[in-house]
Length: 222
Image (tube, rainbow, N blue to C red):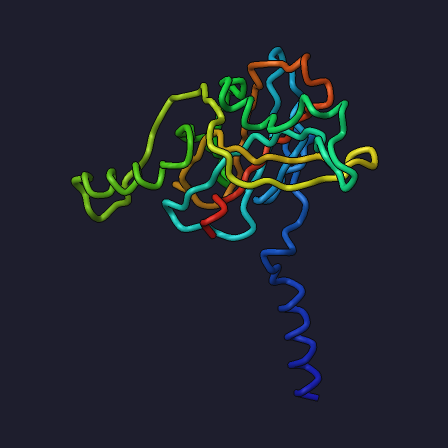
């Protein structure tokens, strides 16, 4: 009898203790709160601010770097049979957009704790925020508390290609180039984030181009 009771108790405890992979769905303003890493389509419309909510599956160390990527999606200009003439204008398109500084975005990031308290989250263009954080740590007067990175910067150029993937679109192979826009540091625990994104340019000369926004760790990080 005792053994049965212990088995039943352990089953109840297991059901109550959610693992990080079993977070219940969460919604804010009718939108899904995504778990990092994630990507979502970004409409290429300079007149439209788009909002994305996200959280982490488990607590992250204070000072961990998280990166926001813009991911241009465009047709591959070649296949197993050679070049595809109609897609040759897309050859090395990601590099063209970087070199011509045509990947400009406005980003605003907020954190909300479990009580709904809002905190502005500083963003830094590129991926060197961990180095900046290290410098702040060295310079802080109160060694008992972690340094805090703050910035009101909102306008960023995506200039640092990180990784490239492929995706099937309408039965054809498209390239997905993940380019770093900005990074931020984990400085709050729990809660969720609200990311507001406005793409500042359009690409009428590339009608097959689309875009994702992606939030994840740098490829060399966790």
